[in-house]
Image 1 (cartoon, one colour):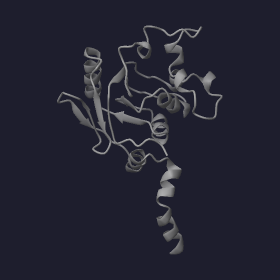
Image 2: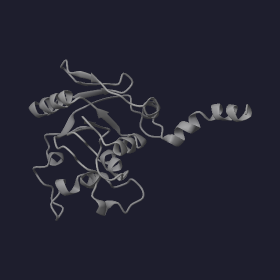
Image 3: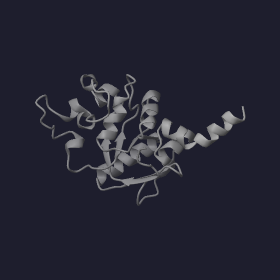
Length: 195
């Protein structure tokens, strides 16, 4: 079982770059592992570190100014190859949600399958979030999964988002697909008896 996701209130890390692909999220040279451990330290590796491993001061994740469990990204996040490791890396770096105005379908599904919530907002809402976080890095974002809303805390900026009911149920209960099947075991057994 994973951590349940109901309501998240957190500061955010702004990454206002469009068309971030999965090779930028987690470079191919780090895909040798078959378990999810250790991927977080290599999230955005080539943007985040020099070749010798020294952190690049200008990259947002290396700044002490920005912290939080929410990554705010530009449009078309997660495009490129279908690697599940991208979701592992983001979650492994401590993020519980990614907010963008558009996600690649395969990335969205991989994220949801791995307990990471991709929140799709309008371009206007995304611009408002970037503006608020850049103006005050202590700005908090509230994501209410049950209500399917996202808001900039302390403002009137609030918007609804869509999520498949099954994936919502899994996130709220901390289930992966197997946990979900175990949770309805009795219904499955009843169905088998009555066939």
